[in-house]
Image (cartoon, rainbow, N blue to C red; front, side, top):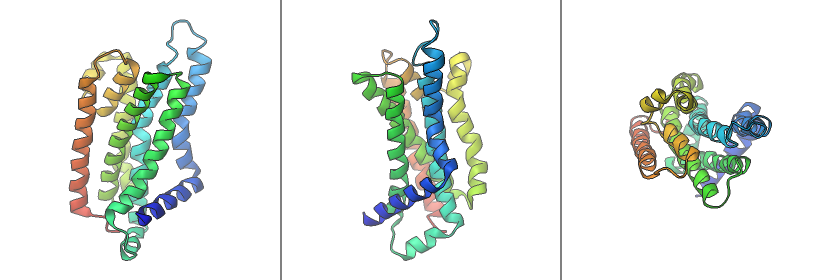
Amino acid sequence: MSSARSIFIKQLKDTLKNRMVLVQFIVFPVMAFVMTEFVAKTSDTIPDTIFVTMFGAMFVGMTPLMMTNSAIAEDRERKSLRFLVMAGVRPYEYLLGVGGFVMLICSIISVAFGLIGGFSGPEFVKFVAVLIMGSAASALLGSAIGIISKNQQAAAAIGTPIFMILAFSPMIAQFNPSVGKMTGIFYTQQVNLLVNDFSAGAAKPLLIILANIIVLAVLFMLAYNKKGLRG
C-alpha cells in the first residue's frame, strides 16, 4: 500500500503544478455557485437547486473521466509505467493511487455542491452519495480509455466525444424530455434524475447506475487484460 500512497502523492503534486487540471475541478462548482446566488435565488420562477444539480451531473460526467484518462495516458506516453513496474509497483497499487486521488477530490467537490445547493440531513447525504457513485463510474471509464490509448492526444480524441455526451445530455434532457428517454441508460442521466427529485423512486435509477459501474468495470478489466499498464 506504500506504493499506492506514493502514486497518490505524485498525482497530487502533478495536479497542483497543472493549472488547467485544477480548473477542471473547480469550474463546475464555481459556475453552480455563481448561477445559484445571482440567478436562481433572485428569481421566483427558478428553483434554487437547479444549477447545482445541473452542473453536478455535468461534473460527474466530465471531470473524473478526463482526470483518470489523462493521468494514465500521460504516464504511458512518458514511459513512467515501465519504471514503476521495475520499481516493484503493482498494477492495482498504481490504479488505486491514481483512482483514489481522483475520487477523493470528487468527493470533496460533491460535498461542495451539496453545500452550495443548501441540502441538509438525509437529502445532503443522498445528494453527495449519488454524485460519488457517478464519479466512480466515470473514473472507471476514464481508466479504461487511458489504458488503451498510446498517448494523451489519443486519449483526448477518444474521451472528448464520450464525456461531451455524458456531461451535456442531462442538461439537454431537462429542456427536452425526448433526449432523456434516449440517454436513460447512461449513469449521468440517472444521477441527474436522482439529485433533482429525492421523493421519486430511487430503486430503478440506482440499479441503472450500478449496472453502469459493473459494465464499465468489466470494460476496464478487458482493456487491462489486453494492454496492461505497459508504458
